[in-house]
Image 1 (cartoon, rainbow, N blue to C red):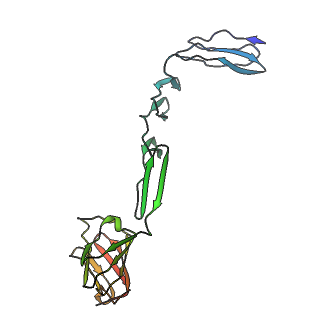
Image 2 (cartoon, one colour; image 1 turned 90 degrees about the vertical axis):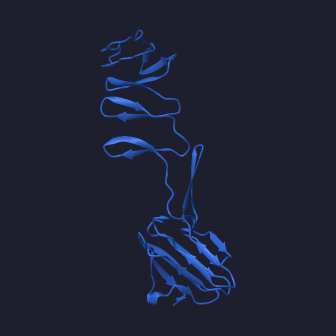
Image 3 (cartoon, rainbow, N blue to C red; image 1 turned 30 degrees about the vertical axis):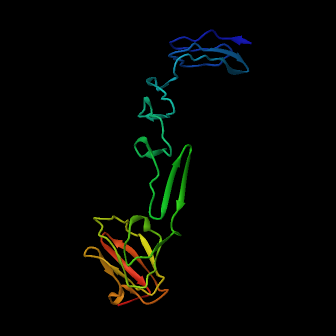
Length: 224
């Protein structure tokens, strides 16, 4: 077995046994390498924080609970400690960023230690028993049941008040004798064939879909 002595700062250009190492430039601990068929690292003792060097410059100390990112062509950048649900997301031509998932219409995102849960909210019912109701963001993808003996007015707020994403759909079901009338100031504008915005009778169902910033389409079992 041939043996190489301790490596110190500088450049090592030859190793016994015919194996060449062109550059070894340690910045901290002393490393002893023993050679026998292959190079085997037998002793490595670190007494200080790990320092990583890339391309000869730009040494960086790893942040506790963080990750290392390649920065340009000559440096490594440590990130801050990641929080629950954070991911490393690519950014073309730039360093990756730390980001979390954003919930969309009908979707919830729950971040926990070491896990992310994505769930659908599209099957949830919102049961209303009063004679007035104004839809809210969490109604996205839901069926709103309206049950009352008297007439019921459902208001669609303007985008400036409640910014539903375009494409949001909400269903309505008449569960009592009181008919449901969909109403909106201008804006928003409601669009329905023959300007029909009221459910026909008991157990009628209808729906709305947002098709522009302050424009909703109305469809289903509705009358003028």
